[in-house]
Image (cartoon, rainbow, N blue to C red):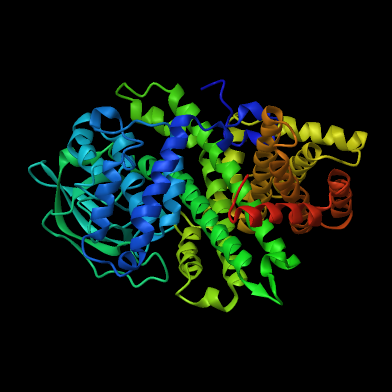
Length: 584
């Protein structure tokens, strides 16, 4: 673990292209899993989407069971409990492919992610043996019950209570959970409650327990085929052996499972966005105005290109992060009695990157479906066209697994905490930046130098925030949000460029041309956006001569020779139109 990169370290040093995992590194097994998962969605889910949206009785369970037969519910489960024990890249691939499946992706994700991973990571042998084999076969459907009417983002404010029974054999749970995915058909719930009103703890609760009931199905904007209900707990008796992990340590379960959930959700968004681009490119090729395909119009080309750029960056982020999670979890010995704590520490290491993935991918897919509707014109507003459903389904992603607002506040807070603990060399990086500014910064050229410029802009901005607020910076959400946007841009730029460089090293520049163009277009455009964010943030942190000096430093750091991104986008759009889909 000591040789692996620290979470957040991408800001403070250089990473070599060979150190990151990319989709070009897929093994033959990964490619087979991709074909299997993509084929399942194409053959079994999409043809039945109308039935799914209408909540046809028994269909979701039927599809989950078919998923289980193909091993698509068992990627993260050890073989000892009938799982496939695949690597994190494999489970990421499955999540991406499921992203095309609309509401089914939410059901499948609830089953394989937050509905079962608490048991996989934190359960004891008995709990795993009793529940996991039935979960991977879909004989039992899982659900995750954390959110409450008065506790969404503030998970620690839950009011559900647990009290030990007089005979010491059960915990008695009372409370209500809201917006619970899979609730209407779940056989087992991961429930969070406070023992004696203060010890935040996790329980495995069987759905047939007396006193457990669910409310009516929520009437939702999108993902209509998935079950979302309130779960009501009235004197529900939970055997003491169903207490998960440790009393008072439920937050460790909740937050680490949410980290994984955020990452998996980003993979779902990737598949969703690719589907939106495929529909849009196909429509643009077929739809004619003024006797020519609209794909030949410059502003339609811009849309197709920008969709592809955002997808490429999200894809580069997701699989780089998947590689890091795989490496760290593979390096840990979780076989002992402290295995759950060790695994949690490993997952927590990349919590910052998980939040970045979640924010970027959910906002990228939002862009893709919105522009997809625009490309379809009036037809995009018609429910007869699939893009309309994709548009509605995508909206929940920015709310799920912690809103993007709360994830934005987490990114700089986690980074500052890790720096204070000595895990990140923040002060050393700031000292180097000051020396660099004193010596003079040459005009940057080339994407590698622009990525470094992005890192320098982030450092200038965060050190100014620390100078003004110190540790109270964590209370300034407007500043934290802007710092998060800068950090997200840095990670995206570096992921995109390292992937392109790695492809160029192995395939040659000509073969990697499209990846290089995608990365260059994103980096050149995003650096100018970062300058605007930094200007706005610095103006909120300083005034007078101090602000003048800071803006002069910013101009030094951000002076660069831009590339012709209009030409790059034309070339990208041509590749998308020719393929009729996302292609790299």
